[in-house]
Length: 250
Ligand code: NAP
Image (cartoon, rainbow, N blue to C red):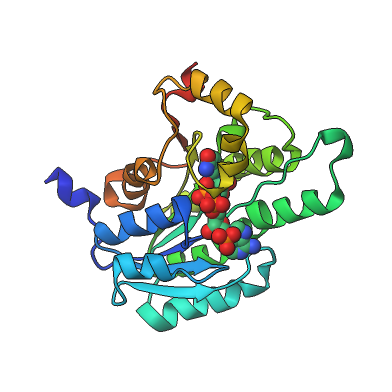
């Protein structure tokens, strides 16, 4: 039955940035589909744990701005649930400054969290997936994987690279039954876009350009996450799916 293909019973998923926003939504969605979730977050994911329940959610507190925490994330997940089947690289940051003045600090912060740690965590998870006979990696990309953006040069660079890396890893790991895909959210109402939404001019410009006529929400990303994490998505590989209310179609 087709709905059975979306089930994640017996699967274990790591979701980074699980305390809030899209990562929290993805963690809830995977758990509702049947998975046990290891949420990785810089601030504790207490709210997410309360929503999902302690038996199906385990929080590892880690700072993903450096790759040093990766072994403890993998070991922690294995110790708690015994296997890893799904990795969602959701944690990400944005820094806004005119390109002409953009600082090295802003460049490194964004590239380290959004790209470097994402790659090395994927590499560590893929080693586990190979032992298990396969797995799923879902990266969270952006509209700025397709477009240039304004005043966010390191963010655009990191998210464009995430789309490229998604294809590169698919090419090398599909033979191990590993799917590497990405979700590119449009303009979603989370902490990440708080500054944009507070700027009346930018906010109304953005809203006026979204065919759906509204900002996206946590809920809007849930279906794509379950599709890409589940057997229903087994033949989708190397692709970045936009969940954007039609933004890219405009
Ligand atoms: P958010 O509410 O700001 O969430 C970002 C998440 O990443 C938070 O859980 C944050 O933890 C975590 N994080 C950031 N730096 C971290 C670090 N060094 N170590 C551990 N965790 C870290 O924004 P969001 O919109 O849900 O963002 C989720 C992803 O979607 C990001 O990759 C973002 O770039 C992407 N995205 C968002 C939009 C949008 O419109 N909202 C559009 C396209 C793409 P803390 O809460 O502790 O900071």
